[in-house]
Image 1 (cartoon, helix red, strand yellow):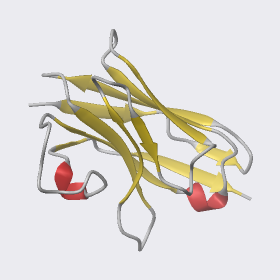
Image 2 (tube, rainbow, N blue to C red):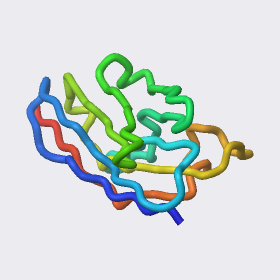
Image 3 (tube, rainbow, N blue to C red):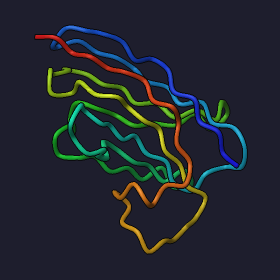
Image 4 (cartoon, helix red, strand yellow):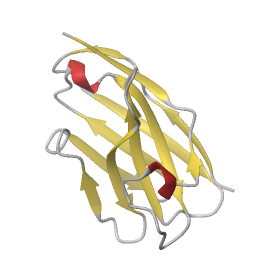
Length: 125
């Protein structure tokens, strides 16, 4: 079993920056991602990374502003968020999966077997 613990969420003003961390324990994941969920909205993928290759993907709404990265020595996933906007306000979740393939889309919630408890990011204008 993979256990994920997020941290780093906070309240910031628009234009500010935050770095979220996700400490992982257990077997090494194949795929990890950051999702977010705003009140009344569905959970959506923000960014994902293949742990082995380091290949990344970003949703269009955050591309150029957010950076997903990993520190294998610390078994930690990061999300550097710059130029934050009020629309970025949401609960941010770290997700992981051990499988190299699945019927589900890489951006689908169902693709990920393990989830953290979430960390709140609030951006004020």
